[in-house]
Length: 93
Image 1 (spheres, rainbow, N blue to C red):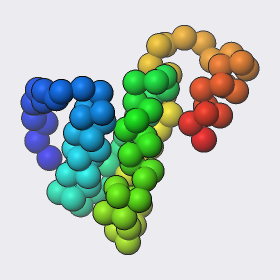
Image 2 (cartoon, one colour):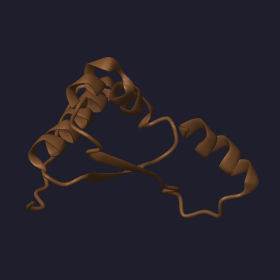
Image 3 (cartoon, one colour):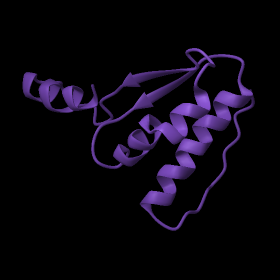
Image 4 (tube, rainbow, N blue to C red):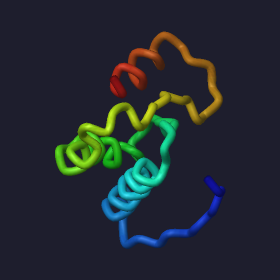
């Protein structure tokens, strides 16, 4: 798969979440391999995660087997304390 970059302009955060979900589904549809996605915390990607978990998106990948692997990452490069583990990673689970 070629690495192509593209700037996508959208109206607001809701449209961005839908555009990101569409991009992930497009990658899954065109790739024969399992795609890896790094999942960050915070409120920015929360709507995307909600969309991907909703029936409208989940049903489009049903029956295709495990096509996406998600990895929880700390994008702030800070030490993970016991409190941080309980808040961020428990919320993601």
